[in-house]
Image (cartoon, rainbow, N blue to C red; front, top):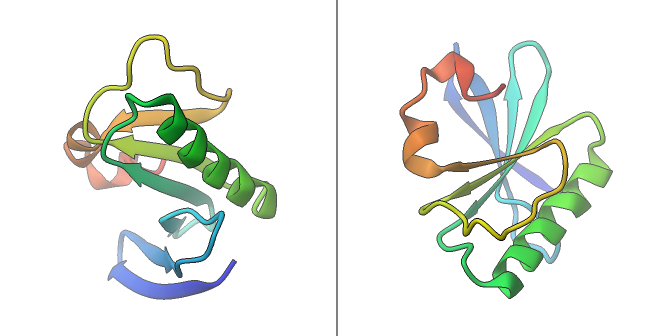
Amino acid sequence: MRLSKHYVSATLCQLSIILPFQNQVDFLETAHDGSECLIQVCADLSEETTRTRELQELEFARRERPGASGLLLCAEKPPPEAKFPQGLRVETLWKWLGRPRDSRHV
């Protein structure tokens, strides 16, 4: 996994933007305690083919970084019939951005 590192805040975390390759997630967040969160961002999860593609990319990255948690951020709530792997957090972007900074990486 190739990373381009960008420091968001000296006190918050390190955010790495994943360089565009097939089967890669959008961001890797590293908290000060060393814990990692792979973040995939998707505008619309209503189509099953889109969900499948986004989940495959996230699961591929989680195999490369087995200790990292996974987060799928989307613009709208996913449809009720959507199924997601156990241990994967799915949140709307607006809800995630409204959280205090120190609780986003949970």
